[in-house]
Structure formats: structure tokens, C-alpha cells
Image (tube, rainbow, N blue to C red; front, side):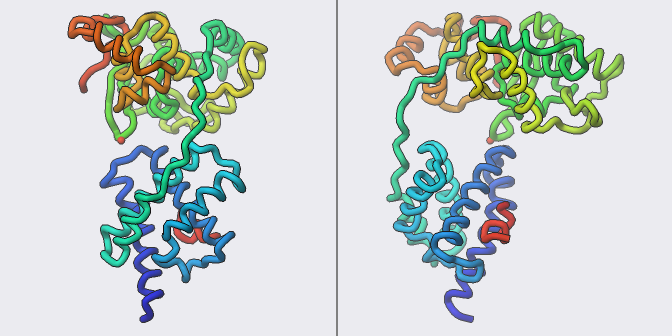
Length: 343
């Protein structure tokens, strides 16, 4: 067996193990994160195949040289029109795989060491687009609650906005995750890295959810059923993100106040911004959003480091415990690509 053939076999086995076991069991990444990582490696393999002429049987360690990776980054930006942030996400995926490959076999250690010298593309800094409360009101006003689909969408988008949850977090909610019977109604969501957090609901939103459940789930809701499901599907079928995005785009197109660039994540960003406007502390917003780093939250709502330091200075334990009682959180992540199942 030649050296090239041995390397090809080891690389192929590593790709399968990385995407099939490492990302899910070891890293415990969310479904979205796994798809992003797989897409990143898949795009690198697309580049090797279309630009470098690499075939499955010629995929060896030398394909992961620094100059090849740097040329790939340039190709993504120029030929594919990827933004700097997208390029950096794809690079992070490739870093993860090469690090995994080098840990599996010492023959690839040099590639694991050399990729650390590949610099991320510096993104152009821009302030987040401010979405006004009037825009959110206009969006909800465009939903026809006289139709069965409109009733569901009105409840769905109200939950997404009022709790600032990620779209997959909301679509993954089951009846068992909803607690409306107490004085402090809440939902329990599963975020990145399978981390659970509790988000308390405004009474108005709890009322909307309660009415929705009575209409769509009846008097005896099944705990294991999804809260939101396809109108023509079963309650144990999860609503897909693509369908939700299309519905939101439809409602956005009906209102001149809503930008045509409005998407599901806009609801989350809008709510975070409105919390900040209402005086909610940046640390509390971080916890509500489920961010691991406060720097992520700072970028998210567009505040400076000086503003963050000031916020930390005025925050004490009592503030943390009592701020906005409705929003307390509990303490309680076949092309070449197709040949490896990456497409």
C-alpha cells in the first residue's frame, strides 16, 4: 500500500468520524452548529475538487497546506461572494477537522500546527440595524389572525419576539416545556450546547400561548407534542425553519414599515435592543439571550466597552435578582463533498 493511499484512507475515516461522532458526542454541538461545520468542510472539498482537481482517491494530507487554505479563503470571498464572517465560520470548521485529524494520527500533526498561522478575515465593522417597536407592531398587524395559519403564526412570532429566543429553540418547544399555571408563567428552552434555560413570560404573551394551546392542542395537550407544528401535519412533527422564514417574509412584505431584509433573527435582535432601551442590564440581557460571552451580547446590541463597564459598575446582587421580574432566568452546545456525506 502506497503512502498516498494510506493517507487517503486515514483522511476519509477521519472525516466520517469527525462529522458522525466527534461533533455530536464529544463536542455536543446543536443541530445548526453541526450543519454549519459540515457545510464548512464541504465547501473546502468543493474548492479542492473544482479548482485544484482533487478527487476522492487523491485527498491526502498535503491538501491541507497553509497556502491551499489561504487560497480557499480568497476563493470563498471573491468567487463565492461570502462575507468575512461566513469565511471565518468556514475556517473555524476546517480548523476543527484538521485538529481532529492531527490528534488521530501523528502523521498529520504538522497540518494541525500550521493552520494556526492562517489569519481570519477581518470583518468590516458596522452598527446593528435598529428595529423600532413600531416596526414590530406593524409586522404583527399584518398577520391575519382570522385564518388557522395566521393564529399559529401570531402566537409563534409573539413568543419569538417577547422571549428573544433563537428560531430553533422555539420550534423545539414541547408542551412539557410550557408552564402557564403558576404566578410566574415561563418556557424552558434548550439552547446551544444543549444548555437549558428558563425564560419568564409577560402575562399578555402567556395569554396568547394559552389560547393557542386550547385551539391547537385541545383540553388535554400531550406533553411530548411540539408546541408549534405544521398545519397539515401531526403534532409530533417539528415545524421546519425554512417554512417559518417564508411565513415571516410574507408578513414583512405586506407592511411598508418592515424591511425586505427582515428575518427570524431580526425578532431576537429587536427584543434585545428594546430590553437595553428599557434599562435592562447588559449582563441580564446576556443571560436572557443564552450567550456564553458578554462580548457577544455587546456586539449584538451595539454597545461600547465603556458602556459595558458602566453597567457592571452599577449592578449588584440585588439588581441581578430583581430586575424585570418577568425576565428572570434560572441557573438551571456525487461531488467530493457528497462522497463523504457532507452534502
